[in-house]
Structures are given as C-alpha cells and as structure tokens.
Amino acid sequence: MSSLTVTDEQVSATPAKMIQPAWVRVMHWINALAMVLMILSGWQIYNASPLFGFSFPREYTLGGWLGGGLLWHFAAMWLLMINGLAYLITGFATGRFRKKLLPITPSGVLQDVRAALTFKLGHDDLTVYNYVQRLLYAGIIVVGVLIVLSGLSMWKPVQLYYLVMLFGDYPTARYVHFFCMAAICAFLVIHVLLALLVPKSLRAMIIGR
Image (tube, rainbow, N blue to C red):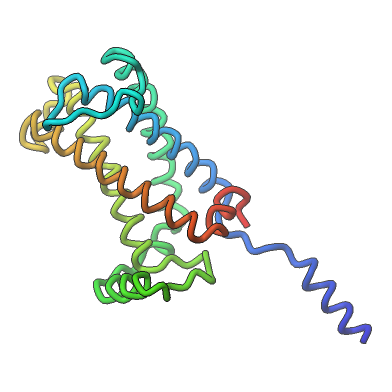
C-alpha cells in the first residue's frame, strides 16, 4: 500500500508535458498582433483605391484615413518582418519545422480531411500535428513570405524594381498582396475555430503546457 501511495505521489508531482516552448508562444502572439494591425490598416489603404467593386466597412479599418492607415501599416510591417524572420530562423535552426511540418503527403491530407469531416480526427497528442495542420501551417509560411515581398514591391517600386519584376508588374503585385491577405484572413478564421474546438491547444499556446 505504501509503495502504491508513493507511486501516486510521483505521478501527481510529474510536471505537465511542455507542448509549446516560450519562444514559440511569444513570437506567435506578436505575429498575431502584427497581422491584425496590418489587415485592418490594409483595409483602410485598400478603400482609398479598391481593386474590386467593394470597400471594407469603415468600422473595421484602422487609421481613419489613407495617411493614418499607411502609418499603422508600416509600423506593423516592421514588427511582422522582424518577428517573422526571427521565427523562421529559429524554426529552421531548432529543427521544429522539420519535426512538426514534415512529411506532408496527399493521402495523409485526404485521410485527415475525411476524419475531420466525420468528427473522428483525434487531438490527444498536441505535440504532433495532423496532416491538415501541417499543410495549413506550411502554406501560411509561404503566404507570409509572398505578402511581405509583394508589399515591399508596392512600397518601393522604383528602388525594389527587381521585386516588382518578380510578380510581373506593379498591378499584379497588388493583386498578389490582396489575395495573400485574403488567405491569411481565412487561415485566422480556421485557426481560431480549431482553437475553440480544442481549448487545450489554446491553453498550451498561453502557458506552454
């Protein structure tokens, strides 16, 4: 009986498993803040010269007018670029991206999509990403690189003309920037919904365990 009691105490004293290290949590929330600021200020900038036949509601924009939107956008741009670059370097250097995001296979993605649609996708081990998560996270990294490059080409089209040529021309860079923004918005909606469906994943991103 005494040995059983000691075992129970040892189990209860075992610290919870670390799921999200501190550097991931800090950079995640900084990126989240920067993205929200850039999206809202970007909508203000878009409204000054719409690409399509609609504008974003004024109450969902940031800056009040074109100049204010640009100031907010540029401020958040530097925050996103510096923090995002640090995240990429650390992710590759620590091997986190390789361990978390690879491999990604079409069969694995289809299998997990079917499991998700039938509410059979497990979330028991948060340290392991399923194939849908791997695809989404890898994809959003690519989208993030594209939106930064297209944004820089729009910001300094003369000085950074080689970036403009990468997209073909200035108008195309604007379209790429817009659709990347739309992809990020869609990702954020899915990301938040999944966090609400699996609350322990949100807790892990706050306290790490």
